[in-house]
Length: 87
Image (tube, rainbow, N blue to C red):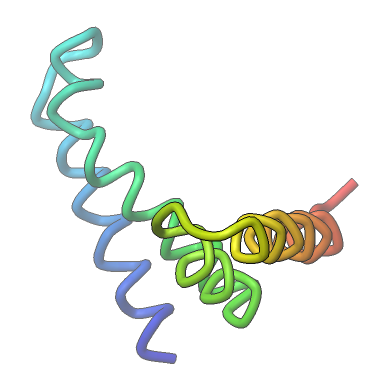
């Protein structure tokens, strides 16, 4: 529930940013961090375990094993997100 409230707060901040900054490159630059944060929040809300696995396993380089685990985590996240898409 707390994560959804955080996502809602980020959504409102992004909405406000879009209202404040005129369309174009300036808006893209000014609102980029909010857009990314909202996307990450929503992904984490929908697929929390898979999102956390990607965050922890893919945060830095490492051994061949860690890179392989990162790829597996990314695939699991992709499958999870796909299962929540509407057709």
